[in-house]
Image 1: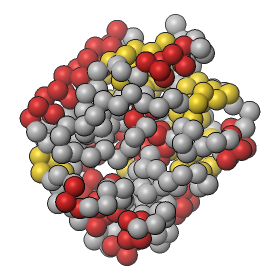
Image 2: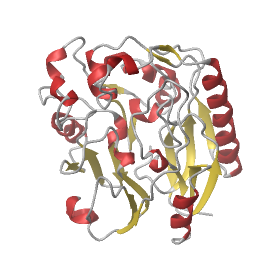
Image 3: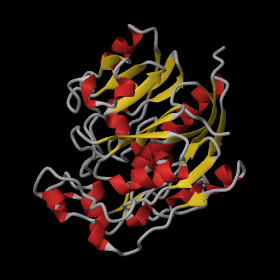
Image 4: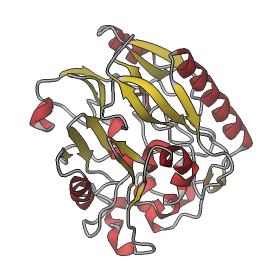
Length: 327
């Protein structure tokens, strides 16, 4: 059975690879979902990422793997043979695992819809994988007004969402409406899990993925982005009793020259190893200090191209199994 929350002790996890990552031709879905915040199309550099970026990102992933092994985790790596149309760096986006469900969601960015193939063999060993239907080339589901006003990139005509828009809290799932997820997607998810509660979060500032806004650190404790949320009252009532750590501003690590990042709050893209240990980008001392007040230790590791490749420690991993027993 796959993990059902974000905080129990990590047992088995997939860690990605950066090989062959590229920014493909900017067609409408990629432009309006991934790069909605970029006003000028000319500012988006296309083509393969520089060799330095790929090599250094892979070095940092190896450092993460070593830490996870020391913590007793079994680590699987994504398939180095599969060449993505976009990237294999972010497996959390392209697969949702929960109890007996292994779901390839109806991804809104069309060039990403086969990126799950780099981890398919690892997940299919655990059971059957459900591949969501998609609308290839159907641009009527995208809203070009996202480039000019505060609106969402997706119309509500067909279910579309990245798996990174969902947080798991056992019988409760939290689903963020954003540029990469629409309301129809939440209905689709609810139909697949009719005995679970899917809570839609739709009254906070639009962002791409939920972990830039909310992180579950342990049961009853969450990290919130004060730029997106000012009060727990904005969240579903099931979270009103939880304690809050307000995330400090990230220490900027910059991007590789010429590349743009989709998020500024990348320090929240952290991996919970167990309720007392998280993995943070090595420069995020202010956040580590806040977490320490709640007896949460931070393993500070390099992730030099988190902003360039749009993936921090949560995004570059996909947990298969967690255990409620913490040694």
